[in-house]
Image (tube, rainbow, N blue to C red; front, top):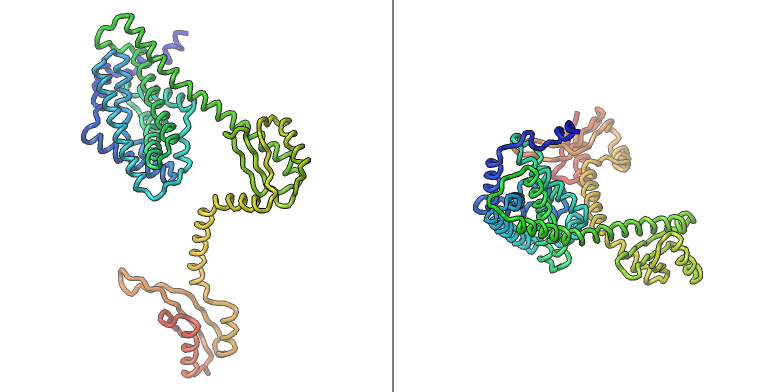
Length: 430
């Protein structure tokens, strides 16, 4: 057993406590360079959230200096250094305000206001975010207390994700969506508090010396305050996690119901929509050809209970106007992506058509008008007339019999100049 404890002993490879605390204190302040780095990181994260780019968001999290005051607050609590705690909280508030202002200004200016999946993911935190923040914080504080710091810090910056919630809160303010702002700020507070708690835990475990003496009664009150804050923050996240689990179960049961009652019976569904947060919950469906009688709908409604789907209204859209509006709304969701694909395909076809000059009709006409031409080739060529200049032209390369006169040659060039752009046409006879 002693060997097992020795294997996980955090005192092995521990750096000097004075050096660790000095390093922590030096990274707390948000003045000068740190403030500029934070503002730039917020802009990068906002752009990443705006265009739904995970890679850009990760890049912003890697350069963010937000962890400094949070770790400072954790060590301050662990060592009862109340001036350091005050300084850490003050700097964290400064960093938070800078971040909110910068992200708010970015999203006010940005022409793209649509909420992407990366933004939506930061609006409803749950217990899993608590776990990520706490254990991510543990990794971070363990790493900075080592002689050999290693490379966990970048991973901690990504895992704890302090930047995206702040940017999402700025987005919520910019579009006037208070639930978005509240959800994102709650996630940010969860991350800050539980990283701080994990730092406090390691500082106590490694027995960092107390800066000032605190009587047992006051120490107990501090512990109780931390416990109360933890419960207050965890309780809503547990509710969100429970709600998420219920929504997932509801979605799985709906899929099972649709599969058994409709798809396996050969009915083609053209529209499907579920509303979990409505009371009662609602399932809307529309079919390509099948028309359901009121009795059938009533029976389907009753059969939903056998799939564990309770307190849910089944709405089958059969009226032509309702059905058309439902289908159109579903189409509208995909209009942007479809239009983008159409534009790409059209552009590629246009570029391809420039190289597809030879065709059956052209060959047929040449055989009739100029039977002396035995072989020919036509295509777009690139001509470098200068070192930094590139010209595209159409080259017509042809071979004729001996009786092909100069008059016939002029006639060929004139005829092809009508068929093809004259200013980009070149003739090569061999």
